[in-house]
Amino acid sequence: MNPIYHALDFGITCIDTQYMRNDFVAAYLIEDQEHVAFVDTGCYLSVPTLLATLDEKNIQREQVGYIILTHIHLDHAGGAGELIRHLPNAKVYVHEYGVNHLIDPSKLRAGVIGVYGELFFKQFLGDLIPIAKEKIVIAKDKDEITLGNRILKFINTPGHARHHVCIWDEKSQGIFSGDTLGVSYREFDTEQGVLIFPPTTPVQFDPDVWKNTIQQLMTLQPKYAYLTHFNRIEFTKKSADMLIHNINNFVEIAIKMQHQPNRHKAIKTALLDYLLEIASKHGVTTEEIKQIKVFKGDLEICAQGLGVWLDKESCAKIPNK
Ligand SMILES: [Zn+2]
Image 1: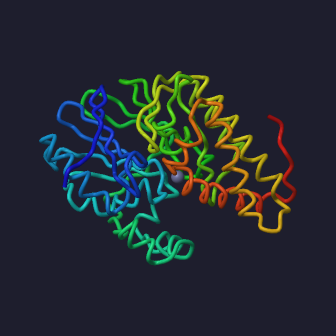
Image 2: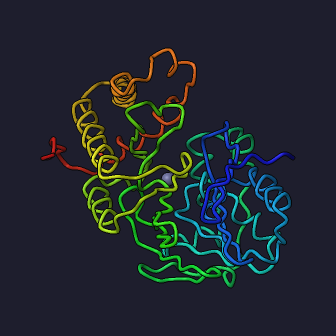
Image 3: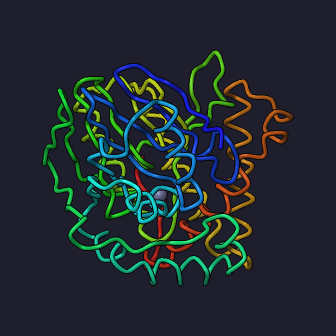
C-alpha cells in the first residue's frame, strides 16, 4: 500500500483517501509535538491508506488522540469506525446530531443502499463499523481541544448539513472546512485562481443558513481552507463571494427547473451547463473538463440535494442575492 499525501506546512498533511479517484477526497493529519489528530477519514476502504501514511511518517498509532469528523457524510466519516479499531488512544469528535449514527450506522447504510444499491456500497464504501459510545465525544460549538502546542476550536457550521462542524486552527490561520467552504478541484486552478462551487448534497442543504455560516467563518479572517474536496486553498473574500454567488445560482437553477416533467434530469443538465460556463470563463477549457470528468458524480448529488430542498419549500421563489 503506497499512500499518496501532500505535506503542507504547520505540521499538516493532506492525505489522498483515493475514494473513487485520486485528488477527490482528502483526510488531514495534524501533528504537533508528537501529538496527532485526523480530520475526516474517507470511507472504510480508505483506512489502509491512512494507516500506511502513519507508518511512512513513523507515527505510532498510540500517538493519535483525535479523530475529528466535520460531518457524517460517508466520504468524510465512513472510515471512522474501522480507523479507531487501530488507534487505541483516539476519541472520535463529532456534532451531537451525528453521535447516534456512529454508534449504530444501520440507518446510514440503509440510506445509501436505498439510493445507490448494494453493489455501489460494497464497491465504493466497503463497510461501516459501529463505534462504541464511550469512544465518542460531542464537538460543541466554540469548544477547544489541545493538540501539543496548538488549540483546535470547533465551530458549528450548518447549511451543507445541520450536523456540520468546522475546525479553526489558529496556528495556521486555517479552517478545516469539510464541505462548508465548498468544493474546489486543483485541476481547475488557472491564472484567475481557484474555482469553488457548493456541494448541495441531500438531505439538509439550506442555502440561507449556509450563506450565513460562510459570513460567520469569514469574521475569523482565515488565510486557508483545508477542503475535503480537495486540499488546502487560500481562502479570501473573493473565494467566499464566489461560493455564495454559486449557491445563489444553484438555487436559481433548481427553482427555474422545478416544474419540468423530469425535474432531476433538468436540474442536472442545467447545473452542468452552468459549471461548464463558469469553468470556461475561469479559463479552463471544455476539453479539459470533459477529460477530467470530475463533475459527473458531483452533479448527480447536487441535483438530488436541490430536489430535496425544493420539496421542502412550499413555493420556491428566486431569493434576493
Ligand atoms: Zn457532505
